[in-house]
Amino acid sequence: MTKRNSKPDLWDSATVKSETLYQASFSTLTVWLKRSREDWYLASQRPNKETDPAPLSEVKGSKPRQDLSFSRWVVGQDVSTVQFVPAMPDRSIVVRPAIPLKVPAGKDALFFLSIPVWVRVLAQPPKGITLCELPTLILSNTWFGEPTSGELCYALRTRAMRSLEEIEDHPYTAICPVSIRNHAPKELDFERLCVPVEHLNVYRGRQRLWTNELEVRFQGNEHSSQVTIGKDAPKFAENLIKVCEAREPVEKALLKQSFSFLRSLTGF
Image (cartoon, rainbow, N blue to C red; front, side, top):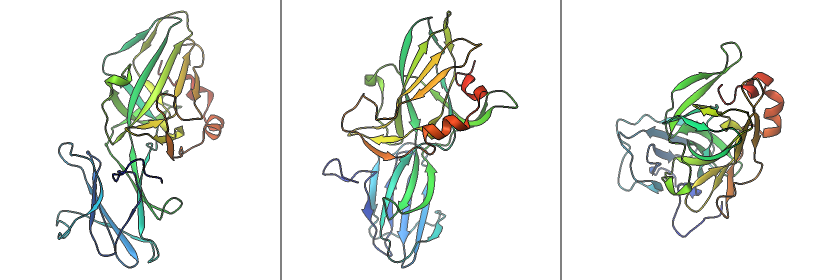
C-alpha cells in the first residue's frame, strides 16, 4: 500500500525482523507480534480504557509479558512483511439510534454511522496469508427478523450523526453514510436499522476510514424496502483508496438473500 504521509500509519505494511517483539495499538485493542525462523506469534489484549493509537513498532529491550497468551502460525522463513487491514464485521449490524428518530412522509434523511472495524492480520501482503481477524470492539449478539426467517446480527447503539462535523475520529471505526428515503404515505419511526456490513468495502482516507454509501427506500410496512449499496467510494471525502474488499460482493448477496430479508431490513 502507498503511504498517505511521511509518518507510519496503523494500516501501512511493515517489515518484521526475526526474534523481535512488536506492538501496535488501535485504541481499544493492543496487538503484539513476533516471528521466528518459520513461525509467527501473535497476542492481543483490550485495555480498560482507550489508549493513543500507535502503528506497529519494535518493543526495544523488552520480553513478552507473562500475562500474554500467544497463538502460533506456521508461515515460512521467506515471509517477513505484515499488514493490518481494516475489515467489516462478519455479520450484519443492527443499529439503534440513542434517541429514536422520525422521518416524515416524503422526506429524506442522511446519517453517518460509525462502524467498529475488525483488524485482519495479513502476512506477506497484499495477497498473502491471513493469520487472524480481531474485533476492535466486542459487540453483543442480537436477532433480527422473524423467529424462523431472521438472522443473527451484532447490536450497536449509535448517535446516528447528521453531519460530518459531529463525527469523532477513531482509528477503530469506519464511517458508513446511510440515506433513508421515506416513500410511504406516513412517517417512518426509525428505531433500528439492519446494516449489511458484510457487503461493504472499506476505504482509507487521510483522516478516516469509510465504507460504501447505503440507501434504504422505505415504502410502508406492507411493502419491501429497496436497499441499494453504492459500488464506488463515498462522495464525502477525496482521494479514498480501497483497502479491503467486501466479504460478499453485492451481486452475490442480492441473489442469496430472501425476499423476507429485504422486507425486514428496516426492522418494521
